[in-house]
Length: 410
View 1 (cartoon, one colour):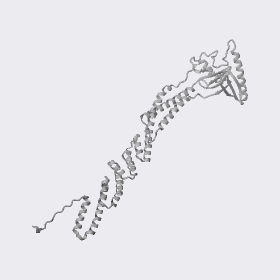
View 2 (tube, rainbow, N blue to C red; view 1 turned 180 degrees about the vertical axis):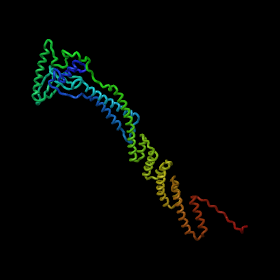
View 3 (cartoon, one colour; view 1 turned 30 degrees about the horizontal axis):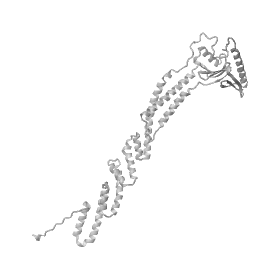
View 4 (tube, rainbow, N blue to C red; view 1 turned 90 degrees about the vertical axis):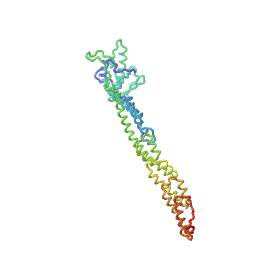
């Protein structure tokens, strides 16, 4: 087997092969199998690989709340542009090379000539001379199989069983005649081989050989690829980040935890309502769910300007009232005083503490009045005044006595 580039042949040989393959001149092929123009699978595969890589990179971290590339940084957008540029460039090359492959002056196919098999499915022919033929046989009823000493095997389909048998006989005869002609003193094999120069050529035929027909725009494919890649990649980056941010926000709202909102902000989310309201609300809810008055008080003191201060104060007031009830049950001013000292936010229930103190004082006064009513109303009135002072200024009181000097002392 030997290889021969069609475009390296002289013009006369190029035209002769094209005419022979199309059965317009001798030698005509005994049998032939047509083929489509070769497709540039390498370039198409490269284009598809770049496109798949682009899709994979675009989907990497998309909408993931905990991913640092949920919102694509600049270098990721540059990667989008590079992959799309590569895909577009390879796609243009695929089209250009396919059009180039279609624009040839011969018919693509595999041809069984009297000289051998010429595999012309590409512009570079693979030639298997009949002198290397090792086997020719009819398979089935309409197929002719030829095998060469290098292992290459070709199957041609004939019109019917008779045509297949006729083709087999022609191959056997052609091989014998080819060997006989080659052994002559001045062998003329043009009647066998379409790739030999004709003995006589048309003097009016153009001398310049056929060259590959390359589309003129093929040289601009790098520019086309870069322009398309940068434009589309930048647009995709913007749209992708917009949609990814929406998904991140929806996930954070669904979880509604401080960690979720903090992850949203740390990974590029910039919605004002998250930092202004949603995050403080989630932090407050997390503290309130602990059912700890100490934790709630600490949170209130650490966040005096919180956007949800009203809700914090309301929850803190409810918790303080519940704790105050235990102090009330102790039936002692000291318990109320300890409660006020233990809770720095007790001002939220200051009125209730005063009411508790007043109630306790009234009970004490009632008990005193029952036991000391016989001493006189003045003593009860004095004790009531003393209790009122204690309720407002206690727990210590300074009592001063002074003698009332009657007029008779004068």
